Image (cartoon, rainbow, N blue to C red; front, side, top):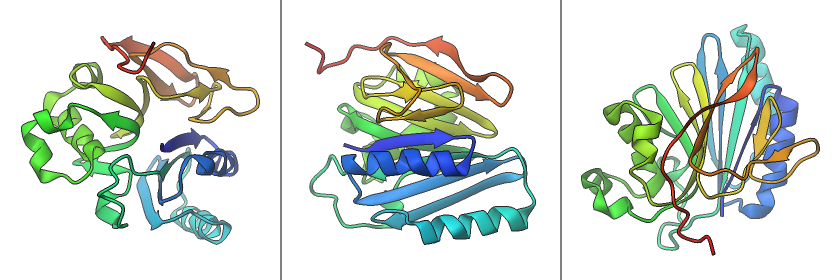
Length: 211
């Protein structure tokens, strides 16, 4: 059981990340999106305060503005793939698309591209780029696939089965103060600084674990 989270302020994003560590801390990843580009970090275990201080320093030296901070903490759903490597740690990248995923793609092996990947989530950014759309891509999947997507300068949240809590500018797999529970599945939110998270589209989705 993984955890995803994000916020427009690093302190809050880090707080939400730590709330999710109870869900699993095999490995962690972070992506900082600024107006001049992306910083991505991957570590075994948990990201600590010292690492966050290094990130603050990197951001200050880059002189970038308008950041958004996204985190992922991983508990492997595939018990045979537990040795840490940067390659099997979220977020995953294909061209200019990054994805961090909470859940499992139960039809992962049905895709031709799956033979190139160790982790089911790795296939998502490749599909997004090659298929050319979020709703078109995620409508092909089965299982649980709630994730954050950074594609160019656009941040999107896809809710399909796994838990998701949101306020206007933050989100988390775990409940946090002031957040609303997103009950709807098969939904995509896009983020902007001015409007926060706004519903963008829907796609067909049937939760296989819903009773």
